[in-house]
Length: 467
Ligand code: FCB
Image (cartoon, rainbow, N blue to C red):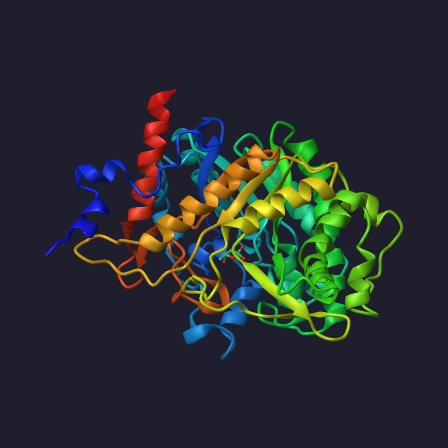
């Protein structure tokens, strides 16, 4: 039996006009040039890992290794998007989403000799053409972690040669897809590739050595820098940038030691990537934190890495509360009694605002920003054909309010992508963690629009009607 409180959240109720998502009238989100979209990544949704000549990636290998992924899940089928892409694009269009961020699976489009795989390329051509037809802007990431396994077998990101292979891949893609991509991102979250992949081994390829992490990072950033001029030459009209996950640290106390620990945490998460890109140098403090891990840098590398960007993609999820570890580093002090998500991540929208306003102060040449990922996981269930993801609705509303505050404080934020369009393979956590605004039943592949997506769609309709 419905009570008064539940009626407020019922889509069919007239009271839902005062819905729990729609931004206030003075929010910059009402500006029609603020792009609102959704994001996914190839390995997390496509499946069809052995079809049409796709080669194995490091995530196929890693997820097939016992103990690496929760419940032994793999991306072999995922959301079966490789076969259901038309239905998925229709879903995006039906929700009125204005932009779609997707990634290309490198092992689907190139063979081990570097020759194009036509069948793989055709998949992305069809997908991008259909998105264009529907008037959806396209934001394409070249590398969202699915490195071809044959490159890992030759050292992966520890081998400088991989950076040159990446530039060849960027060349092929931008020649083949020129004109159908609005924004190219070279890499997704190099911090995760370098640190989780080579520093602590939580992600593929699963190596764990601090020196590996900094060397892998250098080759990732070099790959980015080598690819940029190639993308510019082949597809001049599009925007070019990179996507980075940014960590917000807060100090557990006002003591100088805790504040220093917090500063070092942000050096390790943010300046490690942003300083090379925007200042052309690694932060010295990184090597105070990790002595003896300086990567091998050749003449000219830093200039290559620091080539100007058209945009910076920022992914934000939570904050980390920190104290000094009593030596030269930091330790995490999880706050008690705070709201958390299914990942255990704290809900902390102010962190997004504070990061953005902080970057504006630190980097005089900060490019325009897109929030390329933000969202949360919850244990969503379909009941009577509906998914009431109330925690996500409040999460999105509060994080969009934080973006609005950053814009009002002078940060040039041009758009926001929900992570994620649909529930998918959440890396080391498999299918248990549900980040989608659309629910996926993995047994039947049935998609169910969650209440959060309905409310985003409602807002987009209202915004469109006003202009
Ligand atoms: C980011 C990844 C993305 C997704 C979210 C939850 O680190 O870029 O693929 O898994 O986290």
